[in-house]
Amino acid sequence: MPLFPSLGRRDRVPELMDDPALDPAAHRHALAGLARLNRLSDSAGVLWPEIRLLSQTGSPLRVLDVATGSGDVPRALAAKAARAGLTNVTFAGCDISPTAVAAAADAAPGIHFFTHDAVRDPLPGGYDVVTCSLFLHHLSDDDAASLLAAMRAAAGRLVLVNDLARSRFNHFAVWAACRLVTRSPVVRFDGPASVRSAYTPAEALALAER
Image (cartoon, rainbow, N blue to C red; front, side, top):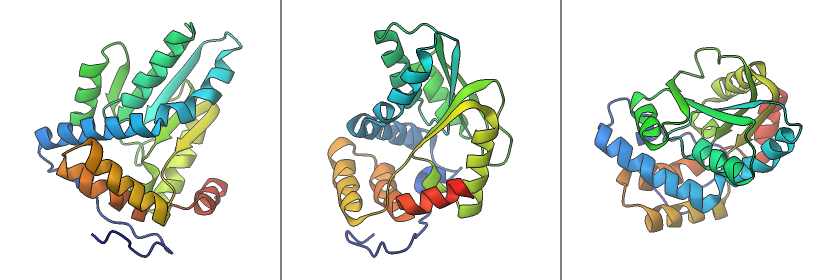
């Protein structure tokens, strides 16, 4: 994969993590690497201010993280809620991969994780906030729009999406970060591929409006 590809248009590159035949051990190794990348980029910190603002009413607040992977984002959000003394916020996560859900449940038995295809099946209701981190770029435009619509239908109060932005700087930054924080060949391939597959902010806004 070229270090400086043309990024004028979105180029969906099939990612190794999306292969159902991926060896479970390699999958878990990759999930651990992605969790370190999420900590480095503060994925949970991007989502937390809006969740904290909603929680200040004191009413129960249920948060669902879609395509949660190893569950590192809801784990980090739950830790932030605990440090802030917010006992009215609960978290859950879903993912299409049983391997990912098992890894998430092992790491955080106090959070409800379940297997679910969020692109093909409606999301369960009863949640106030539905979040999604670093997943939208995996999808075709039609599937991305469908996912956003499903999140809107499931969220009683708020939808939060955090994803990569396609740019030359981000491509190089992700390429470098993947080599600094993990030895997983899956992550080292998928990271830069994700930037090539990502939307620009304007493209993501158009999807949301659609």
